[in-house]
Image 1 (tube, rainbow, N blue to C red):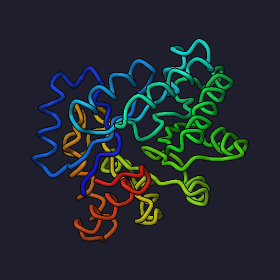
Image 2: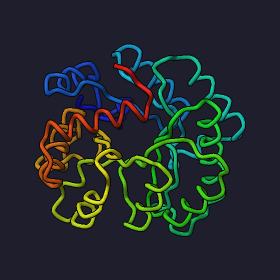
Image 3: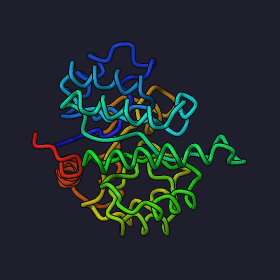
Length: 258
């Protein structure tokens, strides 16, 4: 089963979501997981998931922390969205990101919001989809400070080998996107070869990170097939084996029987 485990179908770049999904289906993509970036975005993700028979994840992205006034209220609002639909399968996209905040002035608020959502995932027994960019030490510090971790994945992996080993030991899955196809992504391709096949997930992060040869264009969930074919070649694994295993991984992590 070919699954795009991370596609932002709520993004304004997608003007015809129905057609985008039909295109993906024509190319063999059977399911799409729709993460959210804020409470309001989560509501939109659930609406699309219910209408199009896909799945949604509910969460506040670290770049959207300005949308949060009271963290307790945020948690309550997210919980309400989660419990309001059977199409919600996880908490995400959550995490830490200091790419735009080199001085880490938002570190305190990012950590508070991240921990709160990790607690919600444990409370609801849901997996998490974690975003991490230029935040390895802070992420490791945060995970070490949480007494009970939810199961989950690191979406669009952007860490080094040492951090990869750390999260694999914690039981996390690892997702890779179209940027693994870029000519400059030598280190990332070396990293993906160190991920056990039973922990690997396929994703697009659409509308971002279009794979070669579509780099620079609006990414689409149909392109997860390109990611799958590229990784099968890199890992010297048959394409059917890769698709079947990554599909099983996604269904297992998100407790789906489809």
